[in-house]
Image 1: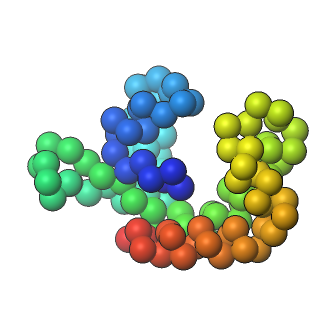
Image 2 (image 1 turned 90 degrees about the horizontal axis):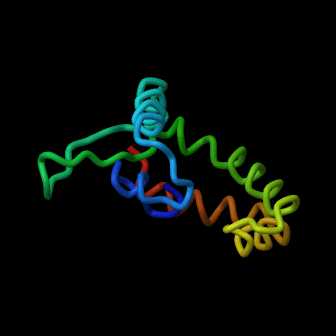
Length: 106
């Protein structure tokens, strides 16, 4: 979601190459745990869009810590630039991402 993906097909097309059954299961669990909300797309009634709840958005500092760790220990990290920003000023990155997420939180 930090990368702007909001639909099942967008998540499925991500570089992580997650299997369809695993993706469906994980989205269901996140919805059940009130981390995500699933809503029908206003533009296409057969498409669902996912957004973070406040509970999900509150996980941001933990996600940032994991991204920081990954950038530090994984030389091939696809998010290397964000990792550098995190290492330079983690508080600013969290603040910027929180502002971005506020617009999208349900």
